Length: 352
Ligand code: NAP
Image 1: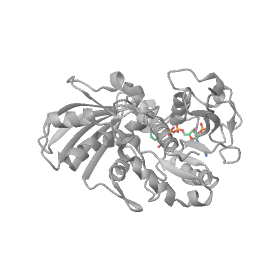
Image 2 (image 1 turned 135 degrees about the horizontal axis):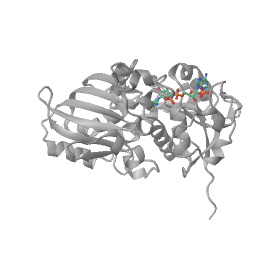
Image 3 (image 1 turned 60 degrees about the vertical axis):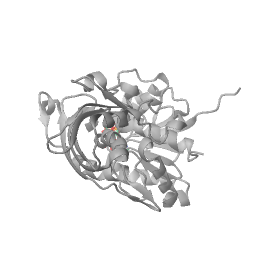
């Protein structure tokens, strides 16, 4: 039987931390193949190997190493674009690609809260993709935009989703310990982070608070009605390479026991389990019984970086319950999330 051709995809911001992760994760993807890479003018015309300061722990795929960086413009780009640009650049550039008929699968915050742009975690809110049909790009050129969330709210939203369904959520208090790879490359200067904790990440607390409501909100007619719970986040940068760890306290609407909460996490499969998407983890959430887990160095690769690890569930004397959550910021929180969104888009017929 003839092999079906893979869908050619492009990566905007291909040389950065998230761009590199895309290159790594797409190397043997069964449906998609990297056909085009672009970054800033600094990289234009260079080979990928020359332009990217490669930080992944696997070698640069040989085919990509010699690929030339294209200009970051829609002319000559494939129709499916993974975008890994800073928000200020994305704000200008992503609409140009959607205008030109591209499916733009974005990592940046530029359009996450736009009322017609879905902010998607397939397990939680795959139905939000219906917003695509309301986008003017879709009507005019066939192009559209889909986003994934901020990396620190991604794991939090996944851990909350089954609890919201089973018990309802009244309030959430989260303290993050965020990896340096979350700041891109070169990110935080070594003099600032070595042996240190930086208790400030610009706009991060605001993003966590507003995106949580949209992610866990409900599609009603032509809009997303945000989930209504109070949320307060404290965001810290710590000297960890990959993996955001969070200490979370929650108040639930209905009474729960620890057994019921752990069962809700363990049984959670989410909305797209039946689709058997290639990059979907078998277990979206893993509950670890060990008293000193999860830890970023030991647990971050679970479910090829797509499983969210929870542990240390115990009563909280301020709210009802508290626990620790860990998720991979450049896989589950960025490139892997966008890849899963692309798989969902293909499965739902949005990629032709
Ligand atoms: P990064 O390491 O700083 O990479 C930025 C990329 O954008 C590089 O490829 C850079 O190319 C390119 N670029 C810069 N200026 C450009 C321009 N004018 N035109 C075209 N390309 C340009 O950043 P990152 O960490 O990968 O983050 C990318 C996006 O993903 C950001 O919006 C970030 O907030 C979001 N995000 C990051 C994470 C994470 O854990 N890192 C998680 C979730 C979301 P050059 O190499 O040529 O400069």
